[in-house]
Length: 95
Image (cartoon, rainbow, N blue to C red; front, side):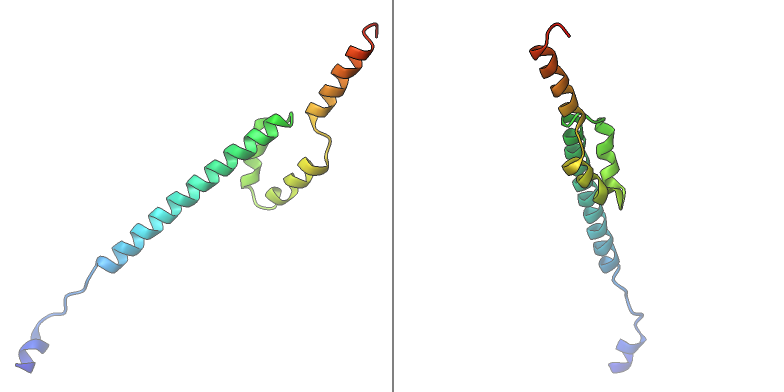
């Protein structure tokens, strides 16, 4: 009886690699979805600050995504400059 068992060819299960592949695909879709949401948020932030919305796409680039928040935090926003111009025009209508 032992010999009969030894003579049967081993059947390999292909379920483990397929399951791993499915998990990998789901993980990649999640990461892509999260990156798209983050890019959308940053595009909106840059647009509201008066910059081109396309600068938000730079947040997907390594190293740039570290520098850009500093530019947003400490730089002069175009919307601030525009607001000051409008306030000067309102306070000095002749000039």
